[in-house]
Length: 275
Image (cartoon, rainbow, N blue to C red; front, side, top):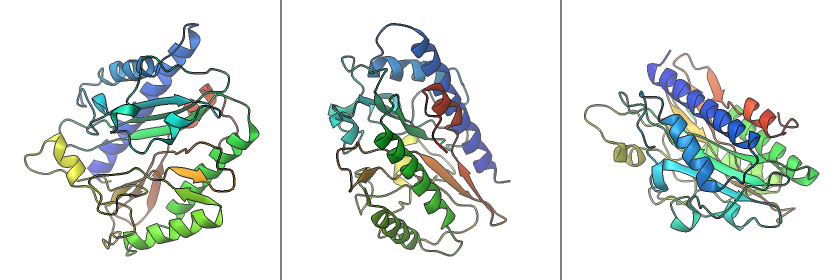
């Protein structure tokens, strides 16, 4: 097994478990929960793990963590162009609606010794609106269908083209993360960089290969990349842009593995309808 894959899986698993732990504790309380409250609680839990850096690699936002709250009626913060924009950093005066809230979360932890990242992110919904529930199920399913299409020897731009056609058929569009490092600006994910020699966290961003319309790199055994399309419904444009951050591993033996890790968090917030 690729040691980098092991570290990525371990780091991501810890990040997901940390989110579940702090979210459970905050929801058990009765006081209002702000974006900063959740961000800070998650950060403190992550910092208990001395094998990862105290802050993530994706900075800004502060500490490499995003936490944005909204509802179907107030979805402006959920339709952000990039987490790097200061207007979309976690705020002290934006609070979770426990009955119908929708939140976007992201963290970018880095293993200290190897520089391997174990990013984790998700959209969570606390309400009962069937349209939103179906919207989230559709997005999750589309991610897994993109993963299913991955083949060794395929150019990354071909995977992007397939994914774009798939989204179009399902009446979705990829709003993407606007990336200053990506020549195409919009993408559906990026490689997990392999750090060697002397490196610093700033190098991680620069070494990524993007899942975009331009990238001619071929998928080979030993590669890992994120699948994190931020999707908007074309048939129901009132629904908020949503996403699920997954990681595809293409192992040395050619087998594939999709890292998810959402199940316990979904159950915690009442998203039992999810796959």
